[in-house]
Amino acid sequence: MSWEQWVAVIALVVAVAGLVLGLVVWRALKRRTPSFSHDDPPTARGDGPVGPPAVVFNPSKGTDGARLRSLVAEVAADSGLPEPLWLETTVEDPGVGQVRTALEQGASVVIAAGGDGTVRAVAEGLAGTEVPMGVLALGTGNLLARNLDLPLTGYRDMVTTALTGRDRPMDLGWLRIDRPRAEEEPQDDVYREAAGRREVAPTPAEDSQAPDVTSGEVPGAELDAEHVFLVIGGMGFDAEMVGGADDDLKARIGWIAYFVGGAKHLLGPKMNATLELGESRESSSFNARTVLIANCGRLPGGVVLFPDAQLDDGWLDVAAIDTRGGIIGWADLLRKVVLQGLGVRRDPLPYSTGSIEFRRAHTLTIRTDEPQHVQVDGDLLGEASVVHARVQHGGLVVRT
Image (cartoon, rainbow, N blue to C red; front, top):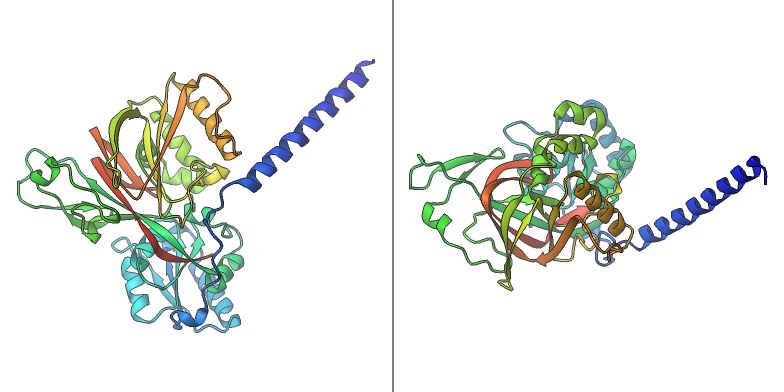
């Protein structure tokens, strides 16, 4: 055959291979675990609050607030809803106080208009109520919106879903940390600052004892000492990656800035940790780059990190992630994540330098030899050597 014929044959083979690969990927994505474990009927509007919609807007996200407010009012009027309340967040109050105001005025839905931090604050204020939360995804990661398959572009589509969509119950994760104590710190209870709130630090006696963990309760925790997360809490490299992301870079290139920020920590030291699962009292020690606690499993870029995690299954999914061999280990870990996102759970290779070990629990405690950075849904909480987590089954009604 002539060289032109060889080129044509090779092109045909590549095209067929691409078609087959595309079909495999499409079928795998069709089979992936849905965000919800079962298909609930829509909540009847007459069963819930009938007051005005309320929007908790974060003005720091660079969105034209006046234009968005006008659009919300227009869609509300077209849908036969009362004129919406408009409540803006501040540095001192990222959303919880605004939710309280909205509830006092009988809001029928409270819409978080901002990034993941605003969504967290609104969810915290609505936790345990029957008032649904809508989401206008205006941030960098938009983690919950991705897992709910909400519109990420087109303000009108976002607003229409938030005002008139379907209400579904979902779980909430709650995380409490024990911070390292300074040597000069007094022995009685002291106050400390954490993520914009004041909380009481435990005494040394509390720190020195391994608390009992029972289903649905974090030991010794008050509600205002816990931090809600809707998607993922992380300890170790994951939190260092969040802390290393540059704000200007996030504004320019979006969620990819987190990976850029994490590059300098790829070869950092591992953590020596112990994981205690609440109900079973099962305990295991391990070395890892990071430990993740998930309420749901999808990340930006279509990455499925927790293939079994669902928003309403009443479980927290835990992953201890480790790598060996430097950059090679991280590349192997990426291979594993891509495969499991395509539905391949059993690694076809006999030897691997990246590992992901999964567990499930209603409550859990992680203890490390050295303090580690901790984050929840992209918000850095600081350093801690002990992390407690629990799931609140059906703790939030969300609009999809």
